[in-house]
Length: 505
Image 1 (cartoon, rainbow, N blue to C red):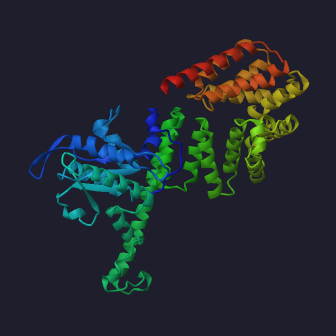
Image 2 (image 1 turned 90 degrees about the vertical axis):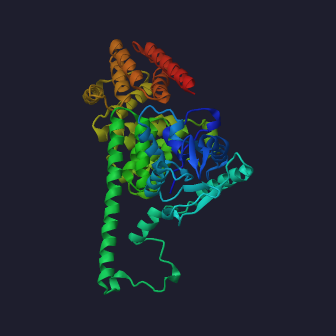
Image 3 (image 1 turned 180 degrees about the horizontal axis):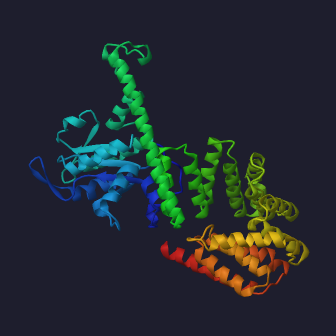
């Protein structure tokens, strides 16, 4: 069971972890609820959970050093279906802890569902002296002592140790997956003392062995098709979430798809793009770096890797970057992207961004932006950046030579802004705002700035547009109608969003 590295928040801070972060540290507890009869006596399982299981799980650590978070669906407040949340916990939790004491049918159902979906990460306990059903007699089942009698401290330490070691060793512990691996021709092999050595299916003339080999191929095909369908469903749900701008939901679906198929290039690329849109540049860079290693000739992966590197480099002061000469600024990755795909205007434009905002070379930046504008036949992003750079160098806005390209850029952004829902937000609105600004249309500029603020999903998006206007126009003493009003609106929007973020934290 592999686990992608992600940023995690400390549960002790009280900050609400995102769903994906929650699952990566979750220990889902499968056990009876309330008072139940066990071996002729009444047992308070809620007390057992609170006095024994919960503190033991809290003391366990993941291989990354994070504390596990115990979860029980009956003790959570869910806005949706409890069954939906229960199955998500069963399927995606980092580890599951089950207590079979009392032979509760719900407990065994949930254990079966867990074993069917996860190869590893399931531990089973029972109260001392409690019997083990025949069907799971081959599974390692640990004993614990009821906390109402002496020995609870030792049981607590045992549970913590078993959970920590289970995560560290990551061994296959599902009898379902164990049996299917054998059917699919994988490990483990039959016991060495079975008395006979099996012949390879291809060399066997035994009709039964030939039939078994045929069944094995069919099972492999069935498994492959099932995984393919699950990934397709998750990707479809993720795309729908992106369409309605529910980025966190999309992120969880893409992450889940990668749990089924870690080498799925589309899922990893989409996850990286969602992370980038959320402003999580370090997490996005990790996905794009992995993608560039999985597919070294994938130009889009190198481009997005370079963009993420450039965004991170901008956040680090110039002096600190000089000292850390090993730190990439995105240029090398973007240059590789342009070599792999010379017609990708976005890679050329992103190179312009690195030259302008990281390396502080306006001449090189202007050349890159103009190359991008040429390749794209007037895409608004490189075109508007070239206009701003030229304004910085000459101290004025001259739209004459770019009139036709600017009209095409405006037409494209209008179509995106008028779509339902709008496409490429908030940049379609911010680019329209710039076009109105350069044409000295104050009302049109303000109207599009307001729309851009409304559709911004992260503080950095507002800050990027505000800083662009400030650094390329205001700082170069270029005053246009409505410019100062638009910047004030952006600054107010930035403060409002930061205030909401502080309230949520």
